[in-house]
Length: 332
Ligand code: TYM
Image (tube, rainbow, N blue to C red; front, top):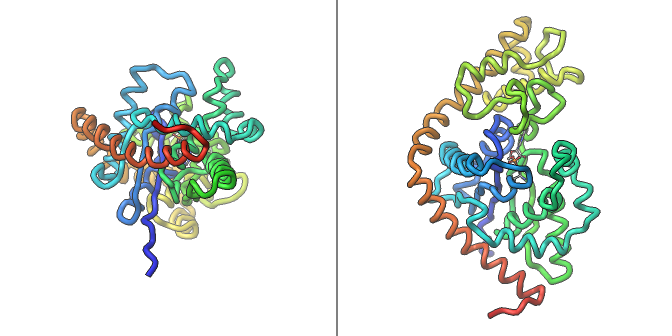
């Protein structure tokens, strides 16, 4: 019988702001689905974060926080490799090689680059431009099969696949071509402007629900969510606010659109919004409790960082040395 290779899952989150319900439903919540059957690596991608100016002390603090949140969301650092990107130098080393196999035109078409350059007019740095190549390196370094992500990262994943296929075509099979994994919460919209993605760096606190917001804040934010002038809870064009709340409610309760429409028939938006807030808070509360316990134990988090960086680095070295050999670098 054919001996199937155990598949690998990789994903990452930037420690560039307090994580939102968008990050949770689009990515983080799905990470634990794979841990029993796959080799899983979940990275805190601090090197990506500095493409936008960060306060050093805040970046350091948030790196611990995202790691603590990974664990609080049910990831076990003995089972999955939970680590920090800058602790494994092979990411940046592979990114340099892949830079030389990525076209200027491809990077110029990345919508996130265009959006972020518009938002950071005074700091359109080279890292912001080549950021998708570092992301490709993150993924390809571990021969990843599956990448759980939100919709905003899909274009970067497609570029990753193109880079991998190009490299494989030139040098024979080197990288596994990864697939994205997305579910119904892959795009959660802003509560203030429901045609825009919910973003952790949004300046308007009412637009975002944070994973760590207390229950009353969560409910207050949902109650303030922008909707429309009708009163009917149903998914439709022109009802982006309500449609977004329905997606969120469905993710937290497992209910389908028809059930949600029936549940809130004739009761108006107020009650629906409160129910969305209650459902969200109910799921987040135990995570917050665990998070606070984990975060208070810094030496535990440091030991997780260290042990897991070593495990990741061991795997990363294998791919990197293969790549170095293929491109013609000499070895010592
Ligand atoms: P980041 O840190 O912006 O977001 C982390 C994850 O959350 C998803 N996400 C959302 N999903 C649904 N609705 C939203 N409003 C929403 N906002 C964010 C993102 O799609 C992402 O999955 N470049 C990545 C980090 C990264 C990475 C990687 C991911 C670096 N290397 C390798 C996967 C594999 C980023 O900036 O995600």
